[in-house]
Image (cartoon, rainbow, N blue to C red; front, side, top):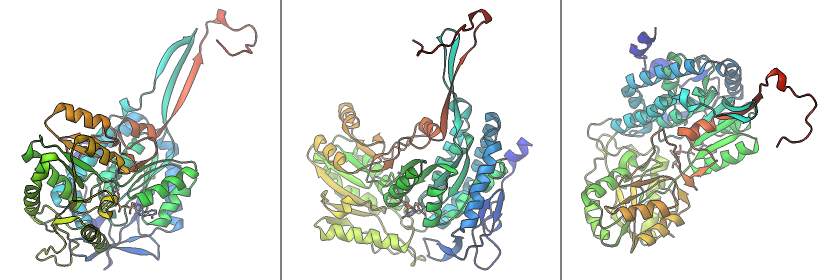
Length: 519
Ligand code: NAD
């Protein structure tokens, strides 16, 4: 039976799985093991960002449907939390194989709804898959601690136990990876899970839910609801939900952190960023410029770890013209077109916002070295495209510096020394990621030691840790105290029970009550 599951490809046609046969395709809810059509009267359109055509509709789940989903999680928790760790491991072993087998289909759905290039969409799935693979080592990750003989005949040991129903609220920019940071880690620990994907890219999450069901996850262990604020408030308020994992903007993340925490839940909240790449004049020029261009404009800059701000130190200032040339060479096109490097932004509103932030830089005295605002993509004239844009002579007070742009825009600052560069980075409120480009070990050591950012790359532009570590954004980019995946992810999704036991030989039994603290 296992072999047949491993070899069978899930039938992943979106029409079959998530959409009804009506003329306006609709995304289903996943409640108690069934893909069900919502009875909601409120629906949101899903657009293809390359054309702005409406390609589907997603419901704002009704209160009744959300209650049914969380009740299903609560019921399933009773048996799932008692399922052996080996059985849970087997389900996730099958799951990782199903994801691998269907990576191209998943990527297609991502490109259609999110816009990123197909190759990048495969990377989105692959980085999530690595978390599932990591979850498969749960038999080691969930080990407790023991200390025998803490006093005569007495031993202490701990169990790591699931906490109950957990919930995840996901953003639009990684439709596969970020949901896969959430429910696999939560569920493999024995929790049940309520997922709310981004309403802008819901289909990939539905495909992932179907595959998890096919891998053997029992009904109710994962439920998926859709919606916006009402769904988020529901998750923050429902008392059966014990923990919330959020990834998205600061506006939503701080609100969810506060509301969820007030209601007694654990909340981990990964939020926005302004990641600086410090370029030292001794860096390998060829490598550095290519890294910068890829990390600034890949995924049209819609990555929380995009390297959106360059600080050119000393003589590295003279590399600007070459940086512009390399950026110009990137091909802007629909994500499913061969050779596309930079796809569209998620929505016309996102495009307008990015364009107005570019204009704000010009108005405030920065220099626009490359302007992607008027880019035309043949055959996709209605898409939300912005081409690679470079703004130099930016200073910290400018709006294009203080706000996260989340588009294909690289802003460039200058510094006279490494100390000046570190000062700039440490004075920016965000702390998601940063990178230094240098060939000098002492420079790299000083930077990694003194910079106050949670994830630091040395000649690595996007230093997102693999899942055996944790995603450790800090300061304004994170709320909470335990991070996503890795050891911290296991801590987030478990609680510890400590058992102290004494087994005395018959002749050592206490003869009278002990009323003082043992010493
Ligand atoms: P978003 O905050 O708009 O949406 C994220 C989720 O929150 C969605 O499910 C949405 O329905 C919900 N939501 C949106 N606005 C809300 C509000 N006001 N109140 C309650 N819920 C709300 O984020 P997005 O635009 O989908 O994603 C982009 C943002 O996510 C960027 O800021 C990016 O840096 C950040 N991000 C961070 C990380 C990280 O790990 N630090 C990773 C990916 C994306």
